[in-house]
Image (cartoon, rainbow over all chains, first blue to last red; front, side, top):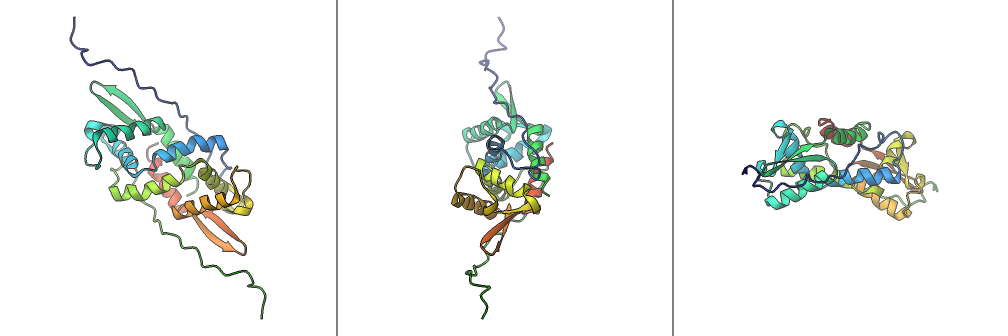
Length: 122
Length: 122
């Protein structure tokens, strides 16, 4: 009998798949369905704490961070976890559990698609 | 006496100035102040109807549109006007009154700055 797995083995967290969406905004109006899908991503970044956490993950060494790496954003660790989960649900972050901690990483394809939608207007 | 100005001359609508903000998100975490400012813009696009209206303006002939150009988004004209005003207040659209109608146009520098913040992650 080995003791290496005394930590509970958790299910990999289910993440709704959010495919990159939609043409450059100058090309044509979004359909209702496209707008619904994409607005979720913008909304996820529409909260100052969440946006700050997103930038913390994006700029962290190696492009990933866990709650253990995050301090001084002025909210409690459970709140940080909650916001990171919201960002994951919106498809902007992916997560991977390693031992005690869940590590979050930017999902580059989704975020780049958002950038391209807007970038076409510059 | 001329009759050309029988329409009431309205004050130009006050628009809060929103300067393009913030470094690429991979560079460093946003400060609380930067996040506050930028989250407002993302939040403005975080509503499906508003995002759709934004794409309608962005893709409209000449890059501008008035409420009179917008139909079939499934909301009333006053609601359309309300959402366009929110987008203007967030700095994403500018507006100009011509006669009866207010014309909205994308503010390219602000939107490009948002695109660049995200684009750096792609």
